[in-house]
Image (cartoon, rainbow, N blue to C red; front, side):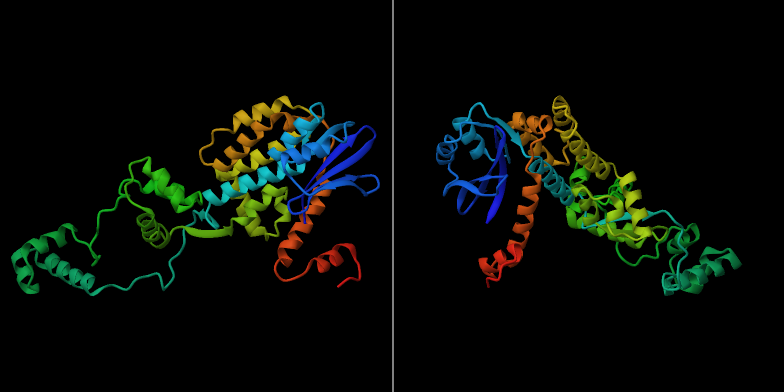
Length: 371
């Protein structure tokens, strides 16, 4: 199966190097669609010998493969190598996609600060202990005598004193000291950002938190999701945010008006989500700006964001191939259309893998009668 494709231009003729992981490398004339030559290898030495036959090649577009870069440098040192924009955009989107999955829950959480009227199910009935305390306090208010009231209800004077002063708890469960005591506001702020609990733990550790993820999950469930009835929690799938990385506008996400407003609100309020989308948009604009020097500014600007480790890897790979990436901004040569078709074929191949034969795939794409 064809996996990656690159275009080679020689004088007025256009050629293409199609790289096959299984079968090797093919040189194709783009005007006629006919193959010029083919080798059954992707090794640097073999590809270099193959390219030496075409000394007139001036421009080559390719992906970020180190092997092909080395082979071109050896065989055609004067050829201008251009990093294919399709691979650059796809690489950045996939890196940011991984960072979104690393930092955000499967559901993006939104907290609506609205006063919610308790329903009949949420109004807890008065416990027997509470009824008894009410009766004891009623007796005390009538006679204002500690000894007499304690004797009537058969309780200790010290217990009665606590009831009168309000120093009692109706919670029958033992209250345990939490590692999160004193960090309630920080926990709520991190929770409202929709961060994963593993990421929240790392942030809280900076503040001295010594507990683990399960302690945090129990605290959130007990004191935020169950106890605080003055808030309404709504959720929307994280994939909707991921879709925006692949050049899809909010109107194309298939959301109803309520979820669309929720997504807009989330992006507006969540600084990390807003930053991720900003990085993606700026890079797309940069590729078509004809200003290669701005690439250095973009790389320096976003190189040290701790939450985006996969973006850092993309930036590191871009720096290693900086000349070819800058050439993709300068020159118009691109292999985007071919790569798009190849990508579709790869998706069909993954769907059919292990169940169908190559003849069916050929029939599917070339509309033949072979079965």
